Image 1: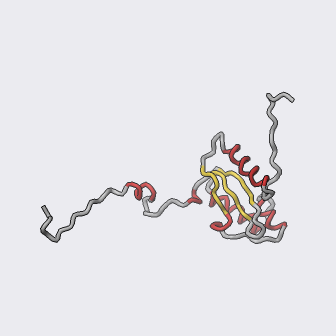
Image 2 (image 1 turned 90 degrees about the vertical axis):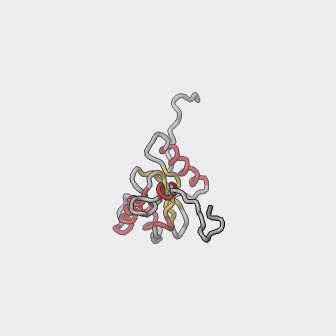
Image 3 (image 1 turned 90 degrees about the horizontal axis):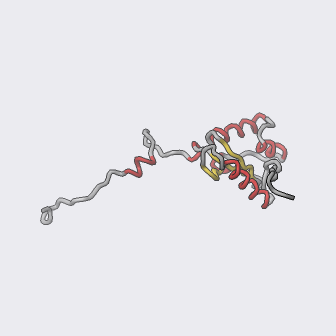
Length: 139
């Protein structure tokens, strides 16, 4: 019908993906608003601290930062930085969300796996991993 005219026809879609990714205010979701298992990497020696959280990653980073600033011993990561005279870096550089999940039955197993992986490479800040023996196993 419009072949011999200057009118061009385009096909549009109701961009469902964009609507699902964007919040009501038009911004995308922040990966630090999630919860699950995260790693903090020392900017100086590259050792890693791996832990789970039921809160957001950003809240936990802010807690580690406060512990570092005020010399509080509650954060193992802050203790490492203070004990070795290392500085803390920006969240975008030192924090990795390695597994996004809610608090469920598997999160403890996943956390132990990621800590074990860093233990194998001799690259962890966490305390020694405590492994429970299987009560049903015969020795």
